[in-house]
Image 1 (cartoon, rainbow, N blue to C red):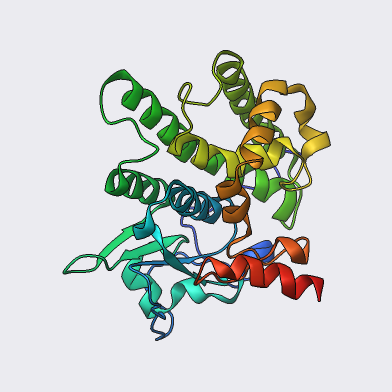
Image 2: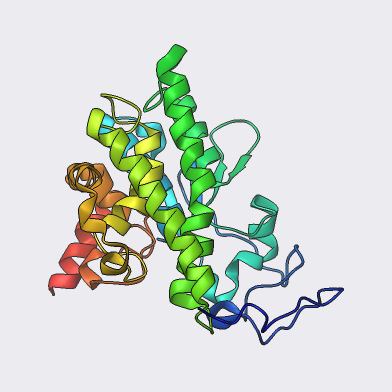
Length: 288
């Protein structure tokens, strides 16, 4: 066990710019833009500014699933926001999301543009706009929203907690990794128990709750997140794996996972999406 007396917090915390690990160049304790840069605007009513991280994948899966259902109004432009370069601190992006986090959405379908930020809020906004993938009333709606917000509340433990200390922190801290690994495994157990009794997270129907949870816990269960599959023994969560594989077969989920993706197999990446034909063009380019 690490020596718990090695560090004593000072009376007043001060920012050490060099003590941030992999993301030291973009993490800071203040909000607001760092530079002037307007956001591009494409031809569709929905303008998404994002990156193919789990939070970004939630929204592109939702949009592609809506299009799969035939909702033509869900056509969108997906613009790449390279957060490693600090693009989320440009003035245009901050105007859409004052929290400077991806994804951020501008809906220009009405007389006045509507900004929506936070991935869960975007999912719910789109579900209500198109009346799809969320029950409209009663116990079914309550169950769906409960699981949606379960994911929003649990993701910081998985991403900012476990992921940071296990994969990105400049110093490995045993206590921190143990603390967050325990919580992530508890969350996987919560999800596995639920999926033992239900086809999808909120019941028999596929909903925004699944779209929110799948990019995080589905990827984790398949060993695709932080390289931590063996460490967390994810193979024991058999119901999560069954659910993960079923969603991965959905055409909308497959396409959504590609959008704004800049890592992994080049054939799985579509850096920006401005038309449905971009998927086919991308495949042809990779084969050439």
